[in-house]
Image (cartoon, rainbow, N blue to C red):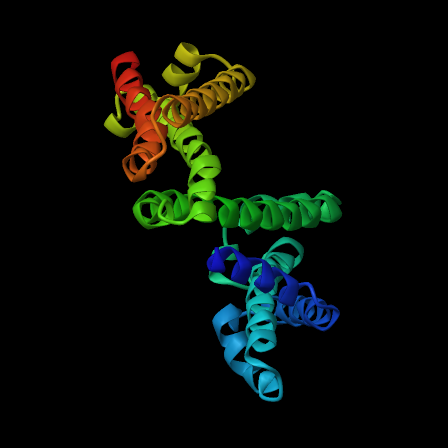
Length: 252
């Protein structure tokens, strides 16, 4: 549990008013760096590094990371308004952004660029976190179950890992995109609209979640409490995932 305590302590440090102020300053400086063609986020971080010499290491990392993220969006401003990519990754923004600016829709284009940057970054962080936890938790389960609090973490968190990977298996393995046998049009014709697929994926996720919790409760209430039972707990939790992969492969 010490790791969880450290995690929440990290969130408490990040949400301090001083560090939040550094976030806004870093984003503003990053946007300015991104607007200047040819600099880029990495060069901007290197140029503004002396600003962090008097800061604590944590505050310095927060500010430098915000400078980098601000530069990612700043390159879209010149791409949309002047058809000049501020960053190499802003080249694609000129294809649609600048024509929209010429039609008098520069505000809409900038809003779309900002929203996509925010949503994309947030989604990427969430997905990376889920993937990392998904790989670490099964490996760490053997040691976590030795501690009562760690066993509770395994009990409540493992089914969510199973649900996450069940949806991944249901979508990727079942659709056979990984084999290249279906085009996008064929996939849409076979599996229905986006809303219908989302509804099926949601139902499948909660079904896998319920089956995983049911398997864990069966082990807890049927088997007598012992060290062997605790080691059977993660095995029971991840059993529905194996059935999901096999069924998805057969369905595809």
